[in-house]
Image (cartoon, rainbow, N blue to C red; front, side, top):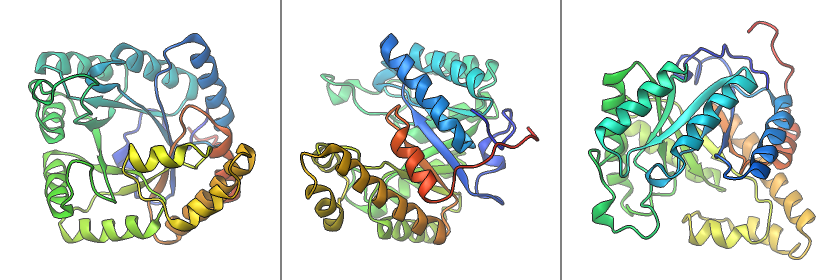
Amino acid sequence: MDSFIDTNMNIRDFLGKDRTTISFEFFPPKTEAGRVTLLGAIDHLSQVSPDFVSVTYGAGGGTRSLSYDLCVQVKAHTSGVVMAHLTCVCHTEEEIATIADQLWNAGITNIMALRGDKPKGMAAENMFGDFAYSQDLIRFLKSRHDFSIGGGCYPEGHTETSDINIGLEHLKQKIDAGCEFLVTQMFFDNDSYFHFVDLARSAGIDVPIVPGIMPVTGFAQLDKFENQFGVILPAALKKSVSVHEGDEAAVEQAGIEWAAEQCKSLLKGGAPGLHFYTLNKSPATVKVCEAIGLVREPSSNR
């Protein structure tokens, strides 16, 4: 996978500068078949020439070794910038230090620092180790190495915090701790993103805020997005997808068309880039990028 960006650069050095960035998110597959599928997706996505890719990290470090192995593999396979996700739920300071050193020594200097979700079946009071919040993790990582650190944010509000002002206070604490850019949870109404950016700027949060995009590719996703992730689905999107219930190819096409229009509007409105949640698949993401003219020729100056 080719990239316009030097593989050793930090995301903070180019995000929000003089170009629109494109990035993809992958998760560590747990089976050989999943690994083969992911590598095929990475090859297919190479025609988009992303500026960076990110690799998720399971709740409580459930895919800790898989995450690290995939980061190293993607870095070797792609010639692009790789960002490792890291969560602090259920981890001790010593464990985080070991992971941070391991990533740094492997040349992975970009981290998405998150608190993380409670592992299934675990009591809430048992989920915290030496770090209670993502800002604690960010501060520790910064003291360990000069990582370029990103954080997550929620344009439609966090499921645990209904008060948007409280959410912004927590977000500002992340920035003050050393977070240098933000990537949003997926959303489907651009007004939510632009309103959130305005609120963040008013709260003194001035780092780049990259919108997270996930094209609808199946009818069953609608219920999952609303009820599991708390995402607001516009009535027009639900209608455009629902009329094709039973025809998954038509559902996917409707989702791609919605995402393409969403991306065009976001970029026109000043978004610094687009971050695609790929679910380790490539067709829908590539089609969206094609529709908005973001399939790019790789740079020879790398």
